[in-house]
Length: 268
Image (tube, rainbow, N blue to C red):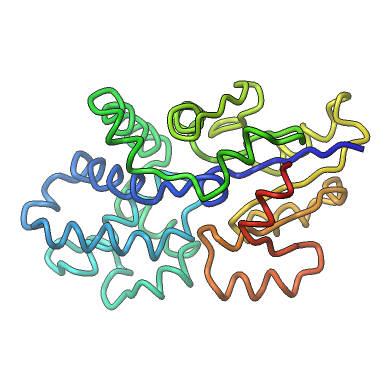
Protein backbone atom coordinates (compact mmCIF):
# COMPACT_ATOMS: atom_id res chain seq x y z
CA UNK A 1 0.00 0.00 0.00
CA UNK A 2 1.34 3.42 -0.97
CA UNK A 3 1.09 6.73 0.87
CA UNK A 4 -0.48 10.06 0.00
CA UNK A 5 0.68 13.15 1.85
CA UNK A 6 -1.35 16.37 1.84
CA UNK A 7 1.04 19.05 3.07
CA UNK A 8 0.40 22.55 4.28
CA UNK A 9 2.93 25.02 2.88
CA UNK A 10 3.64 27.93 5.25
CA UNK A 11 4.83 26.60 8.59
CA UNK A 12 5.28 23.02 7.32
CA UNK A 13 7.46 23.26 4.21
CA UNK A 14 8.47 26.92 4.18
CA UNK A 15 9.13 29.61 6.76
CA UNK A 16 7.67 32.60 4.96
CA UNK A 17 7.12 34.79 8.01
CA UNK A 18 9.87 37.26 7.06
CA UNK A 19 8.44 37.81 3.59
CA UNK A 20 4.79 37.90 4.64
CA UNK A 21 5.51 40.40 7.42
CA UNK A 22 7.44 42.78 5.15
CA UNK A 23 4.79 42.40 2.43
CA UNK A 24 2.09 43.15 4.99
CA UNK A 25 3.82 46.37 6.06
CA UNK A 26 4.20 47.41 2.39
CA UNK A 27 0.50 46.68 1.77
CA UNK A 28 -0.61 48.43 4.96
CA UNK A 29 1.21 51.59 3.86
CA UNK A 30 -0.80 51.53 0.64
CA UNK A 31 -4.11 50.76 2.35
CA UNK A 32 -3.77 53.20 5.26
CA UNK A 33 -0.99 55.67 4.30
CA UNK A 34 -1.84 58.32 6.91
CA UNK A 35 -1.34 55.83 9.74
CA UNK A 36 2.35 55.64 8.86
CA UNK A 37 3.01 59.41 8.91
CA UNK A 38 4.82 59.18 12.25
CA UNK A 39 6.19 55.66 11.93
CA UNK A 40 9.99 55.56 11.85
CA UNK A 41 12.18 52.61 10.88
CA UNK A 42 12.59 51.56 14.53
CA UNK A 43 8.84 51.18 15.01
CA UNK A 44 8.53 49.47 11.65
CA UNK A 45 11.21 46.95 12.68
CA UNK A 46 9.36 46.40 15.97
CA UNK A 47 6.17 45.58 14.06
CA UNK A 48 7.97 43.05 11.84
CA UNK A 49 9.51 41.41 14.93
CA UNK A 50 6.13 41.19 16.67
CA UNK A 51 4.67 39.60 13.55
CA UNK A 52 6.89 36.56 14.15
CA UNK A 53 5.29 36.15 17.58
CA UNK A 54 1.66 36.53 16.45
CA UNK A 55 2.10 34.47 13.25
CA UNK A 56 0.39 31.37 14.74
CA UNK A 57 -3.01 33.10 14.53
CA UNK A 58 -2.81 33.67 10.76
CA UNK A 59 -4.88 31.32 8.63
CA UNK A 60 -4.90 33.34 5.39
CA UNK A 61 -2.26 35.87 4.30
CA UNK A 62 -4.44 38.99 4.28
CA UNK A 63 -4.74 38.71 8.08
CA UNK A 64 -1.13 39.91 8.26
CA UNK A 65 -2.32 43.37 7.16
CA UNK A 66 -4.85 43.47 9.98
CA UNK A 67 -2.17 42.46 12.47
CA UNK A 68 0.20 45.19 11.27
CA UNK A 69 -2.46 47.85 11.78
CA UNK A 70 -3.57 46.43 15.12
CA UNK A 71 0.01 46.36 16.42
CA UNK A 72 0.41 49.95 15.22
CA UNK A 73 -2.74 51.00 17.09
CA UNK A 74 -1.43 49.45 20.30
CA UNK A 75 1.61 51.73 20.08
CA UNK A 76 0.11 55.00 18.76
CA UNK A 77 -3.04 56.09 20.64
CA UNK A 78 -3.81 58.95 18.23
CA UNK A 79 -4.53 56.63 15.30
CA UNK A 80 -6.79 54.19 17.17
CA UNK A 81 -10.02 53.40 15.36
CA UNK A 82 -10.76 50.05 16.99
CA UNK A 83 -12.29 49.47 20.41
CA UNK A 84 -9.91 46.59 21.20
CA UNK A 85 -6.43 48.05 20.72
CA UNK A 86 -6.03 49.98 23.99
CA UNK A 87 -4.08 47.82 26.45
CA UNK A 88 -3.94 44.92 24.00
CA UNK A 89 -0.82 42.74 24.24
CA UNK A 90 0.73 40.21 21.90
CA UNK A 91 -0.49 37.50 24.29
CA UNK A 92 -3.99 38.96 24.02
CA UNK A 93 -3.83 38.71 20.24
CA UNK A 94 -2.63 35.08 20.41
CA UNK A 95 -5.41 34.13 22.81
CA UNK A 96 -8.31 36.04 21.25
CA UNK A 97 -7.66 36.53 17.53
CA UNK A 98 -10.81 34.73 16.39
CA UNK A 99 -12.88 37.22 18.42
CA UNK A 100 -10.76 40.29 17.61
CA UNK A 101 -10.69 39.84 13.83
CA UNK A 102 -14.42 40.35 13.09
CA UNK A 103 -14.50 43.37 15.43
CA UNK A 104 -11.63 45.20 13.74
CA UNK A 105 -12.82 44.25 10.24
CA UNK A 106 -16.15 45.92 11.02
CA UNK A 107 -14.74 48.92 12.87
CA UNK A 108 -12.18 49.60 10.13
CA UNK A 109 -14.78 48.86 7.42
CA UNK A 110 -12.52 46.38 5.65
CA UNK A 111 -13.47 43.58 3.26
CA UNK A 112 -11.64 40.27 3.04
CA UNK A 113 -11.51 40.08 -0.77
CA UNK A 114 -10.08 43.60 -1.13
CA UNK A 115 -7.30 42.83 1.35
CA UNK A 116 -6.50 39.51 -0.35
CA UNK A 117 -6.24 41.30 -3.70
CA UNK A 118 -3.98 44.03 -2.31
CA UNK A 119 -1.72 41.57 -0.48
CA UNK A 120 -1.31 39.50 -3.66
CA UNK A 121 -0.63 42.60 -5.75
CA UNK A 122 2.11 43.81 -3.40
CA UNK A 123 3.79 40.41 -3.53
CA UNK A 124 3.49 40.26 -7.33
CA UNK A 125 5.12 43.70 -7.67
CA UNK A 126 7.94 42.77 -5.28
CA UNK A 127 8.55 39.55 -7.27
CA UNK A 128 8.57 41.44 -10.59
CA UNK A 129 10.91 44.18 -9.37
CA UNK A 130 13.29 42.05 -7.30
CA UNK A 131 12.68 38.31 -7.42
CA UNK A 132 15.98 37.49 -5.71
CA UNK A 133 15.14 39.56 -2.61
CA UNK A 134 11.57 38.25 -2.47
CA UNK A 135 12.79 34.65 -2.69
CA UNK A 136 15.49 35.38 -0.12
CA UNK A 137 12.94 36.59 2.43
CA UNK A 138 11.65 33.01 2.60
CA UNK A 139 13.38 29.79 3.65
CA UNK A 140 12.51 26.12 3.44
CA UNK A 141 12.93 24.19 6.65
CA UNK A 142 16.10 22.05 6.84
CA UNK A 143 15.82 18.78 4.95
CA UNK A 144 12.49 19.63 3.32
CA UNK A 145 13.69 20.31 -0.27
CA UNK A 146 15.50 16.95 -0.47
CA UNK A 147 12.57 15.14 1.16
CA UNK A 148 10.25 16.55 -1.52
CA UNK A 149 12.67 15.78 -4.36
CA UNK A 150 13.14 12.15 -3.37
CA UNK A 151 9.69 11.41 -1.98
CA UNK A 152 8.29 8.03 -2.93
CA UNK A 153 4.86 9.03 -1.62
CA UNK A 154 2.26 10.93 -3.67
CA UNK A 155 2.55 14.59 -2.64
CA UNK A 156 -0.12 17.30 -2.68
CA UNK A 157 0.18 20.85 -1.38
CA UNK A 158 -2.93 22.07 0.43
CA UNK A 159 -2.51 25.72 1.43
CA UNK A 160 -4.30 29.01 1.97
CA UNK A 161 -1.41 30.69 0.11
CA UNK A 162 -2.07 31.78 -3.46
CA UNK A 163 -0.82 28.91 -5.64
CA UNK A 164 1.48 31.05 -7.80
CA UNK A 165 3.57 32.03 -4.77
CA UNK A 166 3.88 28.46 -3.49
CA UNK A 167 4.85 27.27 -6.97
CA UNK A 168 7.48 30.02 -7.39
CA UNK A 169 9.09 29.20 -4.03
CA UNK A 170 9.10 25.46 -4.68
CA UNK A 171 10.81 25.96 -8.05
CA UNK A 172 13.15 28.87 -7.31
CA UNK A 173 14.13 28.18 -3.69
CA UNK A 174 13.68 24.43 -3.18
CA UNK A 175 14.43 23.35 -6.75
CA UNK A 176 11.27 21.22 -6.76
CA UNK A 177 8.60 21.06 -9.45
CA UNK A 178 5.18 19.92 -8.30
CA UNK A 179 2.53 19.74 -11.05
CA UNK A 180 -0.02 22.57 -10.76
CA UNK A 181 -2.88 20.10 -10.41
CA UNK A 182 -1.26 18.93 -7.17
CA UNK A 183 -1.17 22.40 -5.61
CA UNK A 184 -4.45 23.38 -3.98
CA UNK A 185 -4.08 27.05 -3.08
CA UNK A 186 -6.26 29.95 -1.98
CA UNK A 187 -9.62 29.82 -3.75
CA UNK A 188 -9.79 26.02 -4.09
CA UNK A 189 -12.04 25.74 -1.04
CA UNK A 190 -11.59 24.93 2.65
CA UNK A 191 -8.92 22.37 3.44
CA UNK A 192 -11.49 19.86 4.74
CA UNK A 193 -13.19 19.96 1.32
CA UNK A 194 -9.87 19.52 -0.51
CA UNK A 195 -9.08 16.45 1.61
CA UNK A 196 -12.49 15.00 0.73
CA UNK A 197 -11.77 15.58 -2.97
CA UNK A 198 -8.39 13.86 -2.70
CA UNK A 199 -9.71 10.77 -0.93
CA UNK A 200 -12.53 10.37 -3.46
CA UNK A 201 -10.22 10.24 -6.49
CA UNK A 202 -10.24 6.73 -8.01
CA UNK A 203 -6.44 6.67 -8.29
CA UNK A 204 -6.13 7.25 -4.54
CA UNK A 205 -8.19 4.26 -3.43
CA UNK A 206 -6.09 1.96 -1.26
CA UNK A 207 -3.50 4.62 -0.38
CA UNK A 208 -2.74 5.52 3.24
CA UNK A 209 -3.77 9.15 3.75
CA UNK A 210 -1.66 11.63 5.74
CA UNK A 211 -2.27 15.35 6.40
CA UNK A 212 0.54 17.48 7.86
CA UNK A 213 -0.47 20.91 9.18
CA UNK A 214 0.89 23.45 11.66
CA UNK A 215 -2.47 24.97 12.71
CA UNK A 216 -4.23 23.03 15.43
CA UNK A 217 -7.56 24.68 14.56
CA UNK A 218 -7.38 23.23 11.03
CA UNK A 219 -6.73 19.72 12.33
CA UNK A 220 -9.66 20.05 14.74
CA UNK A 221 -11.88 21.00 11.79
CA UNK A 222 -10.80 17.78 10.04
CA UNK A 223 -11.66 15.73 13.13
CA UNK A 224 -15.20 17.16 13.09
CA UNK A 225 -15.79 15.59 9.65
CA UNK A 226 -16.69 11.86 9.94
CA UNK A 227 -15.91 11.44 6.23
CA UNK A 228 -12.26 12.24 7.00
CA UNK A 229 -11.82 9.62 9.73
CA UNK A 230 -9.39 7.71 7.51
CA UNK A 231 -6.75 10.48 7.52
CA UNK A 232 -3.67 10.28 9.72
CA UNK A 233 -3.25 13.78 11.19
CA UNK A 234 0.03 15.42 12.18
CA UNK A 235 0.86 18.74 13.85
CA UNK A 236 4.31 19.94 12.79
CA UNK A 237 6.02 21.09 15.99
CA UNK A 238 8.44 23.30 14.03
CA UNK A 239 5.68 25.41 12.49
CA UNK A 240 3.63 28.42 13.53
CA UNK A 241 2.05 27.09 16.69
CA UNK A 242 2.37 27.81 20.40
CA UNK A 243 3.36 25.57 23.29
CA UNK A 244 -0.23 25.65 24.56
CA UNK A 245 -1.44 24.39 21.17
CA UNK A 246 1.16 21.62 21.12
CA UNK A 247 0.12 20.58 24.63
CA UNK A 248 -3.54 20.49 23.58
CA UNK A 249 -2.70 18.51 20.43
CA UNK A 250 -0.87 15.94 22.56
CA UNK A 251 -4.13 15.27 24.41
CA UNK A 252 -6.10 14.56 21.20
CA UNK A 253 -5.73 10.91 20.19
CA UNK A 254 -6.23 11.56 16.44
CA UNK A 255 -3.32 14.00 16.25
CA UNK A 256 0.33 12.93 16.12
CA UNK A 257 2.94 15.50 17.13
CA UNK A 258 5.68 15.45 14.51
CA UNK A 259 9.33 16.50 14.67
CA UNK A 260 10.91 18.02 11.57
CA UNK A 261 13.52 15.23 11.30
CA UNK A 262 10.79 12.58 11.38
CA UNK A 263 8.73 14.45 8.80
CA UNK A 264 11.54 14.42 6.26
CA UNK A 265 12.00 10.67 6.76
CA UNK A 266 8.28 9.94 6.36
CA UNK A 267 8.12 11.28 2.79
CA UNK A 268 10.88 8.98 1.54
